[in-house]
Length: 627
Image (cartoon, rainbow, N blue to C red):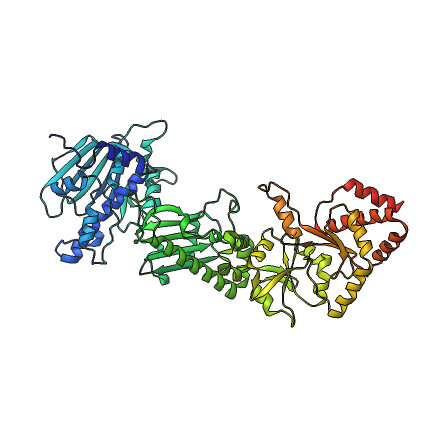
């Protein structure tokens, strides 16, 4: 029979679809199985509508038949089949979709869901095949037709023998190359994995003859091989089942198998909506962070299904960065997919789903915090850092979503506190939320600057993560209460009478303080008398937006080109015996006073956990005093 030419844009278009539209060759099987499912859907819909087919849903199946000797892979269905004209129109015209036409005809019905909308999925066959044969017999017809093509050169259509209605597609696989081993698609394990990956939730059974082993009759340890037809796919997704039908153990097993986690999830979130964007989502909050979670290698995203068919393994656009720890999937029939069904068009539905998921995750975490505090604290140990980064990132755009999910250690006790809980415990007359920064809570509690705050009975948040202070700076206030670093130079908890007395003392010692400032040669902006020290002789504070802790964090970053410096202020406790010694030396021995100033400054650096400028000089000064 004479070869017919494709009626679309010729060889170039087919070459483009085969070589450019699809990223992965393995997609071909998903496309052919989806097409087979569509064909069965059409016939099943006719069964529901007309009731004259004599078929039940249980009669329908999709068969996968590999043949290593012939290097062929057969995908067979018992769906509606195609007439000669339908073969011509659906396969002879590239990018014409029979499924789309059928869907448009039935668009007022909700009983059927067809995802083959573009008419190009079938041509993915040519990515792995150098010849494709399609034998089809339309339901109710006595005639069967065979469509054959070796690619863009064209195709033939001729009569053939076929006992039953439906379609049989035979792929003659290409020879193996160094880059691609096409014969892998004839291996049982490979076919099984692709079906489970992409088509596990096709609503009809996908069957394949598989090799099994059994004990030989009368033998205790001698086995024989045999082949048996097995249904590979699950068919009904766990998220499509009624919530009452699914146990916690089933959710846990699904999560652990799908997302390769040996621990059960900390929380399961199941949500669905209808309307502008119809979708179902099954989300999991892990119990522990993956090993690579806080690295560049970690990929966020939810698995995306279109009517049960996997479109993307990880769709990053469905999760904000601060909820990137969430694992799970979204199944929707409303998303606008591109022509290959491999990628999403960035449209309003996608953004709407992402927005609703964000609200749902935030709500579920809030509920967990309120109703299962121990579980939430465990979750926060694993992923709290990510929430804090979320507060700080994007110039604080998301701070209102996250601020009530934060936990901090505090002077109130061993358990972390929320900001709301802190505010609820604030003393009468307390107008600010106080915090101290250090590597550990123990070091933060020991900072000399905390003495005056604790003496007032005020609670102090202990910030130990690098991002903590940056996050609070971005929040600025909570419940209209500003945050205040206990090391800030403008922290002043004195009474008016104490302030007046201190001003007089400062005036009386201004020459001494100026001398101490000059002797430190630009290491500090100023030396002053402290308004916060009680038992300690000295401490460092900072002026301006950059605190001493922020200086440490910024300078530790590999991207920092220039050293960041906080404006340091050396504070001296006027009530400490050391200050009396300084006053005496100012009158009698200014050279020794310079050494004392250096020692006190170095002592303050050590208290703050900062590196000292010259350890040898510090050691020599100590030895000099001891001698």
